[in-house]
Amino acid sequence: MKSVLRLLGIKKNRGYGGAIKSGIEKVQTKYVVTIDADGQHSLEDIDALYMKILETDADMIIGSRQGQMSASKIRGVGKCIIRGVAKMLMPLDIYDINSGMKMCNASIAKEYIHMCPNGMSYSDVIALLFVNENRLVYEEPIIIKQRVTGKSTISIHTAVETLREIVNIVMMFNPSKIFFPISTILFLLGLGWGLPIVIQGRGVSIGSSLLIIVALLIFLLGLLAEQLAAIRKRLNK
Image 1 (cartoon, rainbow, N blue to C red):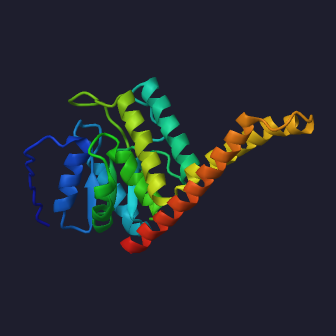
Image 2: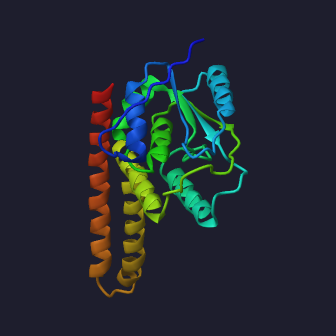
């Protein structure tokens, strides 16, 4: 089989995610694979991902680094926080959502990349989009080697950006996951604050009333956001 290598030139630095998106836009094959350019990924693992995606008919296979040491303790903690937040906001059975090595259906990826950021959080967001849209996503263990070249640019800013993008995705597809818990918490706080005062015959607490009113307003905003999300889904079908 003849291999064809095509280099894409980008006039302006679009960032990590922007570069990947530029490549995906030009892909003409059924599947597309992404790997990091620092030498940590083994090309042999591409075969394992390809066999897995054929075997399972999955939409995405993520190269999982589970069980391997993180580059630093801080990054390890950051990944745990991001996974925890993602699990609270959407159904997530994937461990290594921010792995740079992924193989996925190219046509589906092209549908989603316009919703992905150009920064380092691209890896997390594209995986979360596949998961949130009920695409079939599996993981396959890969081996991570020592970095050959370059220096990691992942920072606290990257983690904050990723968390912000997670919230954006949930707001886009399932806003009730954000609005309704906040509304419930505020309502219970207001009720817990004001009910004892009413029972004691001391009137109605202005603070508790305000909390309950805000909770109802947030609940109504959540209903409106759910309707807008449903309309957007119908328009995209």
